[in-house]
Length: 368
Image (tube, rainbow, N blue to C red; front, side):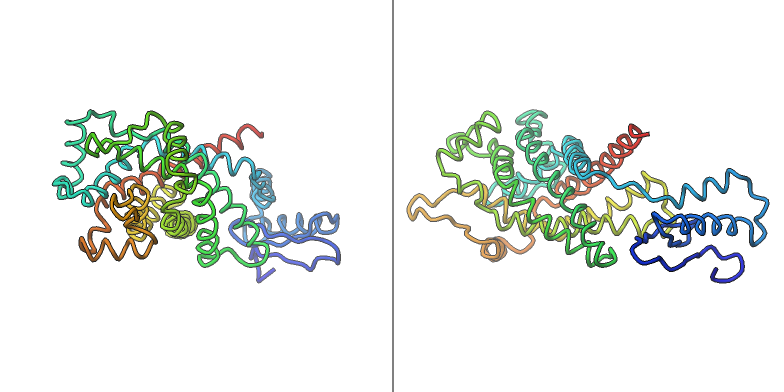
């Protein structure tokens, strides 16, 4: 013991035995698994813990709680991690899709020179509803759901799998979480790029003049027409800004969310829903500010058409797109549609992580 009545207990593991870290009443306790002597010492430590320092009168129930608290936490199966990530992403997207439609259309309005580009979020959304009906805000929803099935599933599942792998070699801190978030976010973006291109096309098609609309009837129709009319490579047009943005999202959303949960618990926000909400809104704000220029570049590149004379695409690379927009239209144009974008990002972060936590809680309840 580290002094009279302290709860830190430790002993050396015999050769060939594994050790693992657990927490006993808020303090770290190291014990040996698969060792009868180790288990006996561990139980004696608990008994001494509750018996020394003026707590000898604690009931047997308190001892039982201490033992349960020190027991190894069960690891969530990888398949459940991926599945809950995808389902959480879909449930969150159902809530925020209208904000995404407004964000894309506000973002692309400046490109077409529309007067609506100068409207605020509420007047812009009101204009869409008055002219096209409230259901127009859900244009492209099937593509958004497909995107979440692929993107959210891969992003959260890969993040947690890689985070746990890295934890075998170094402590999980903000640096490791950001690094893992960047790698897994970029990988998920490459996989889901076809769904992203379909989503952008379908969400903004109604904003075009009638003679320039593509008039996709469904996500399947959009995907097959893009492949047939423009080639398979068109699905990865704008891939780099999407990958760059997704890598930043992986770091700024998933990575910072994981860290914010830890930090908010230290600040006393320990309730499940308040902690998830606070961490989600904080990470959503950071990732909205950081990734908006890449979102703008991705939308422009995914929605562009070749010049009718030169047959050249106006936007070719991420940085060329960002710098071209900033020079031609002003740097703040890169953040056009920020409010609906933040409502989409922050709202989706909150809804997704709350849904994920509740789905996982339900899973564990079925395992009892």
